[in-house]
Length: 174
Image (cartoon, one colour):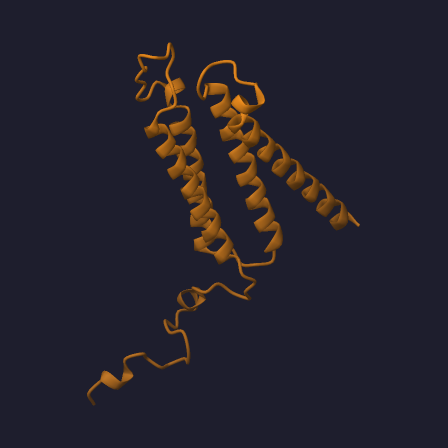
C-alpha cells in the first residue's frame, strides 16, 4: 500500500516538473510572440525562466530514469552521467546569466543594457549538449544486472571468463 502511494507521489512530481519545465521554456522563448516581453531582445527574466525550465526537465528525466531502473546496480558510468549533466547545468547557468554575473559583458551600441550574444548562446548550447550526454550515459548504464560489470576486479581473479585461464596463454613458451 505504501509503495502505491510512493508511486503516485513520484508520478505527480514527475508530471508537475515536466509541465512547469515545458511551460517555462515555452513562455521564455515565445514571450515576444505572446506580447509578454517588457524589453527589446531576450532579457534576464526570460533567460532565468529558460534555465529553470531546463532544470525542471533535467530533474524530471533523472527521476524517471532512476524510477525505471530502480533495481539495477549503480555503475561508474551512471555516476559520470550524473556529474556530466550537473556540470552542463552549471555551464548553462554561467553562460546564460553571464551578464548578471559580470562575465564578458559587452554592451551593444543599439541597446542601453547588456544583450544575449552569440557566445552566450554557444555556451548555453554546450551546456544543454552536456546535459543530454549525461542523460544518455545514465540511461545506457542502468541495465538490470545481478552484479557490476567490473566485479571481476573486486573478486580478484582478473579474468572475465574461465578461472585460471589467461588471455595470452598461447604466447607462453614452455
